[in-house]
Amino acid sequence: MAKTKFNKGKAYHGSDDVTEGKLKGETCLTDYFYFLCPKCEGKQILRVLEYEVRVHKEENEYNEFYEKKATEGFTLAFHLHCENCGFDDFTKISNIGLQQGDIREQQ
Image (cartoon, rainbow, N blue to C red; front, top):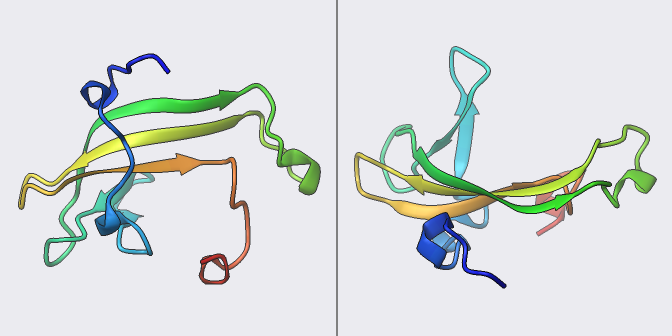
């Protein structure tokens, strides 16, 4: 695989700090979604420093299982950073994979 500009070519996989439900987020006064630092007290917002389209598919292979169809398939990777404590990590968002149900039953 060609070296990526994202994260200066280093791995983009998140650490244990962002798995198993430890990374949370929410909207505030607007419809913008914010990731919250899993290390800080309260709800410190994480900055998104970089992003990369890790997967892009013209068709979403999960469409055949659902009534409502996605227009395409994608996975986005994000480099997250907390200015308050220095936390630095990665996470991904995708519409390829888990698509519905109670996440606690998927673990």
